[in-house]
Image (tube, rainbow, N blue to C red):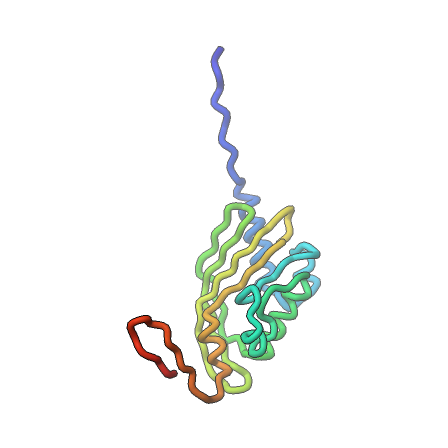
Length: 167
């Protein structure tokens, strides 16, 4: 009896593109609750910059882990209040059909101090059954947080063989 080789199952280009389109759709209009709700699960998990950092949350109230499409909208609304978005450029996008990674750079100008900062960013998202169920947004938080710095010294001691550094 001759056995036929069974074809390997691969993700179709359509499913891969759909996952990318879903995440791009969120990022292209993240302040519109109807748009975000139409592309996310009701219990979508959104992680902004960290899982939980109470000190950073004092500076950037949207930081941490939140739930629901409203949390994504609120984050981008808050970012728009704290900074003027000068540019937001996606440079590379990857998917395996269910997970999406986007890398890029943005330039923001803080609205209170008018400090300009350019940062790389990364988005990791999960898409299941045609909806985003998880989205994580990362950036150079040291740089973006510094755009709100109005004075004082920061003293660091990181190098085991070095000395303190004051910024």
